Every structure is written in C-alpha cells, then in structure tokens.
Length: 138
Image 1 (cartoon, rainbow, N blue to C red):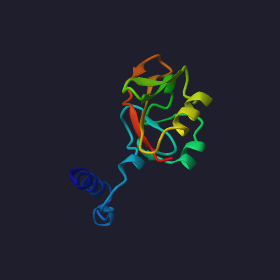
Image 2: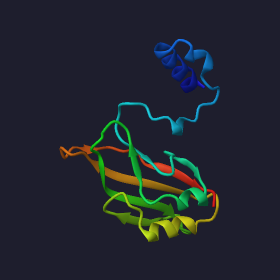
Image 3: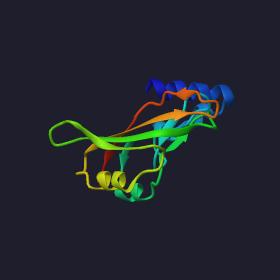
Image 4: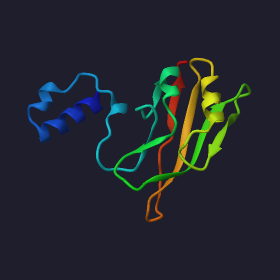
C-alpha cells in the first residue's frame, strides 16, 4: 500500500491529474523506472508466476534499466532438487540453453526457480543485479 501511495504521489509531481487516475493495484513487476542498475526480465516480467505458454516465448534473459551497454556475462538458473539442494545450469551469456528450457518446462506446477546473472557494461564496470524468482505454473 505504501508503495502505491508513494508512486501515486510521484506521479502527481509530474502530472497533478495522475494522482486521481493512478490504478488502485499497480503491477510493480511491469514498471521499470528510469535510473538504477539493470534488472532481469523474462517474458515481460521481473519475477512472479510464469506459464508454459510464456516460457515457450523466452529465448534469452533481458536486462532492463538505465545502463544501455549492459550485457550478461554469466547466467544461472537454479532450482531445489528433491533433496533440497541447489541444482541448475549455467551459461556464459543471456541466451537460455535447451537444457535450461527443458529443466523449467519439466518442473511440477508451483515450483520456484531463480535466475541470477553477472553483468558488465562497455567500460568493464560490473553491475550488481538482484536475482529474479519465478514460480512455474505449467
């Protein structure tokens, strides 16, 4: 609620009429504010539930944010295996491998998976990117 009020207040500074037209429930995963470090996005989302139909459209992890030259130098998709241990796959860029796609597609509905990346920009600066957590809906 506080975030919604804060966002509506910020909108009113830009356009005073926006405070009265701001939606009651904002989909914060769909909002990318200018500034800040890169964030992970797949299927138009920065986290939350993902369906099989959405997953089929994904071929790579996208970065959103204000660092136009940011690029992924390492990608890791992680699940908890049957024994509660981390299991997953790693790649050297943002493109999902077929093994990654298959692993997620074969998860039981309700299972979560986490995507982490390492990111650098054209100057060689490393950027910290928060992991993105998704829940497989199947």
